[in-house]
Image (tube, rainbow, N blue to C red):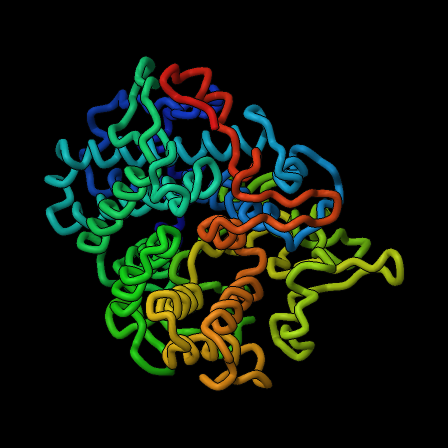
Length: 493
């Protein structure tokens, strides 16, 4: 059964409805053509389509690699080593153009994924639910809604101004909610940031209702959306909107009031006692709320120049498994004296060279080509720190539960550091400690850009790359050239 449910993008899409998507056209809305009325005629065919949605999401151009990589290299923790535009030197420098590989590629794959979700939802509403039954139909539609919401959320973090800038009144994204099956449907103006967030939350709220509480295997609980996945993602979305009261409301559904923090309903999420367990096979711990699985099967891994290990790990000459694209900035988070030498997360840092040639590398994703490390999308540790931050910012106090949540994440890797309320002289000091804990804990997991931008913070300078203030050109990406060429109603940033 496990092998049946593994969703190879190539294998599944070859037999499912979505096989006709024409990605080679480089359209921001790859065209999906339904040529067979039987696409929704059997339970098996419908299930194959559900799994193919995850296949689109986990493409190397999206959540199989680039979305996570870009979310980190835009921040201050990495130094570009290769000056290769194909592997993001322009993203790192904060100056990509409309036609840059990163700009066009991620936009195209995200909208491809969104369109696949739209086509699937349309098909289920038109008759697919009758085939699989009301309960399973609701489950499947909810999975598509969650994937669509995650895709729109990710696009917002890169191509639109943060919600904090004018309370979401700035231009957001073309909000496409109906499946496109042919040409001539590209013209659509950008909705506001607030309108896109409203749709994201509508999808996640619907998904919370429609998704199953859990699956029968740890594999599916990690790689497919369930009810707690929707709740966890809502804490991230509300945090990006600075709606801290709603972060607390959502997190309280899956976080107990006191340590040890666990989810009492649905999948029994909890921190692993050792963070090392999260990033090794089988990758299916209760901490991993959603991850993108990879295998050695052709087409079922990120592909050339998309893999996390390829970017972050040093070359074999330097004791790694990657291409040495980005080393760790010696003046970034690894220089923080509060990140102690005995912290277990220091094991993810590898040094090469000495003296003037000394470099540090992130080896959180150590498997060699074809790079089959699972890609984390959201972990329970993030939900705990989301809640901690929200409690401090909403109460403007040195909140005891926030301190306990911070300790839960910190102590499992650094037994020498235990905070108390008395550890923090001010609310600002506790907030800073939570933010720095996020910076350490999620290094290489794609969250740094989100954290800087949601607070309208300046992207710090690193190496030869200058800082970018929230008012500077380049703080957000330009709109993809392919969208501008096909969509006469879309305006650039």
